[in-house]
Length: 154
Image (cartoon, rainbow, N blue to C red; front, top):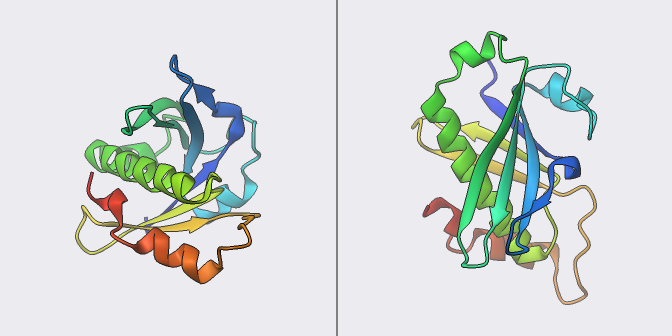
């Protein structure tokens, strides 16, 4: 893998509510930019992918659950360490849910990149059509998302 970026795309077809009525948001993990660009929401992936559910529980906790694998026989699944995958899933769940809590909208994409230390993952949060209320500016939003970075304290 020459490119160490991973793409998590929000796909509402995987959304669920838990027994307490708490929202769960479906994401699909794709391993390169070409696959991310070609992915069709609600469709079975034509490339290696992992579907996940990130849930915002009533008690304030956040969970990330594995839903399934597409093209599990692909080489990428032999190269991508399972522990690294679970670390990514846990951190991505924290990032997505905390962004949702801050702005009331689920991020459309998370772009994850491993930093030099394998346990540090940098996330770029992307919204296709973020609607800020009148009192928020993009600068204020960025500051509130960065303040304390609670999603790294999992």
